[in-house]
Image (tube, rainbow, N blue to C red; front, side, top):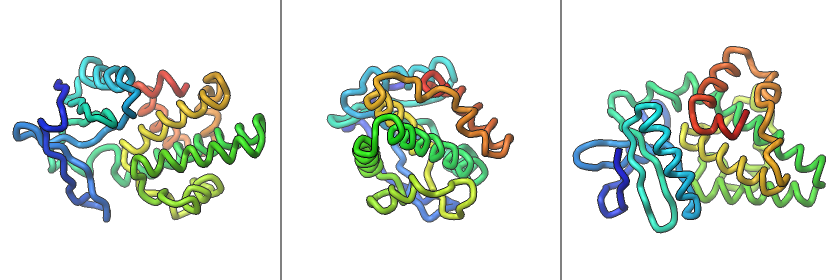
Amino acid sequence: MFILKRQDVEISTIQHPKREQQIPVLSYQGQTFRLISVFAANQQEEAKAFWRDLTDNRGKACVLLEEPDRYSVWGKLRLEQLGSEVGTDTKALPFTQACILLLQTVYIDIADFLGNRQAGLFQKDITDVFRQWHFPQADTSEAVNYLFTMDPLTTLQVPQWEEHHLITLLQELYRLGKEYFGNANFAEGVGEILQDMPASDRNQFLEWLNQSPLGKLWR
């Protein structure tokens, strides 16, 4: 739809109607957009490819925001719809559970194949990702350590992450996994990794994954 610069828009936050959480929103020419995904400054091509896929292939009304230190993709939002899409209570929990299971699997594989030292470095890298992109309930080393050791399918203390957090996590997890393993084999067999999830939750997550550009990474 549009590629915009920071000076073209106004960015603020609004209160989520169902949670004690602030939602980033972008205003441009009387229209409101909600944050979908964030990319680092050196990921210009990835950001543009993600934005084009949403606009050209999925018919989404989106803007790509270029800033000096990052790129971000924002989707058109009608405020009355906030709380009625992915990121709501009905889908956020199983989607977050699935992402945490993938995170834990990559961590365990690094420890098994590359050793505990590399696993420790990976945990530090993930902690930096959570801090850089302001993930709720993941801003301390203790909180991140809990994410690696918890059982997301049984605990009641699953982080309240929005869809843009999950997309960013899977993007960064894939990038780090390729750096550590030297290939993308770790991102195959997602359905098997999530086999302990209820079938309906697993299938819903896989459908969401395959309908996004992430489906080309995680298979």
